Length: 475
Image (cartoon, rainbow, N blue to C red):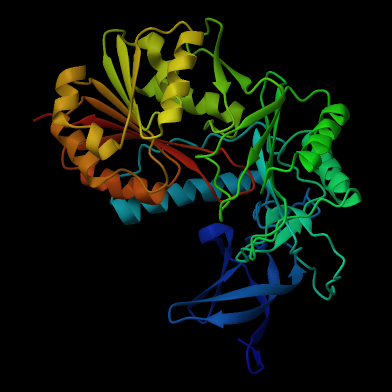
């Protein structure tokens, strides 16, 4: 293969992108070596520049697309190729689904040695744009500069998303295609107001400045929550800004603010102040038995599946494959705000939910009251410490266990407790097929995986949700 070399880089012309790989990057093979390349599509023929070479792989970038892939589609976002949030945006959606299903299969087979013959076709999203119900933007004095752009000392900074791999630089976002209006209008108006009124953006490196974050949430009921996060208590700056937002966007139903003087952007431990409207929004989801709707009160710190429409499909798969007949005790591990627990509650005798975030459990209990559900009990605590033999003795042995852990998967003690309990069925929901594969392999000493159902919650990204249904092996 013809190459040209400089001191620090290798240029290779006319190579074909052959696969989709890790972290949303595509794969090119050069003399047997795997090269990871972002923002290209399998089938593209490119001129490749390799800028980093490791022992077993390399990283590169396409400096020209010589022949576009038949699966290449136009991008819908003006920030594609810089933002990094939607790395697969130029790939036909059908192809995205194919590679997501392949990702699940490869992880389960290679890492977990799981038989994937029961895998069902991936469930795609009806909406591939404007599907997110939450976006969080960052203010920064350090604006990401385009190639060849010089820094202006008078530049106030940017409001947008963090630049990939650079913690203190933010890409100014003019239009994001992932959340419906008025999301873009709110963000752009707040930025313009801040510039015109001299409100200082936050310096992430030196921890100076005022404006830190802007969070926008919406719901299928049409309610909108806006949270402004600032570094210090300055009513003379904050109140006019909040009045401006309220006047410009009267459709906002919950206008809130948080004062964060910490060295990081997390706000789970901070007080939330209601400036206008309610302190929450309400999401609505059809009940599994089609008897009306469930309602979920979402507070500023509440977790809720980011793609509301796909969440209903995901939970429907869970309920359908839990094989409930009305008299079962169900455990919902990592229950969050209890959405899955309440979704399946009408199909069983009782549900016991466990979650380590106390505020989430408070939300779960409140939402159960709102939905007139009286057969759900929720507990807060570290899963590996709460979910024990004594807990099971006190709450009853589960017939079915639903588990939806974070990306790190389940603690080894939790897996061992599942093996000791020997529930007849486990429904394992995962946002990380790699750690799910690890856990399924540990469970395979007593359980067989009888169904695998991938679900796409995040179009244009490499992320995929997966449901694995396990049954206890007969002795």
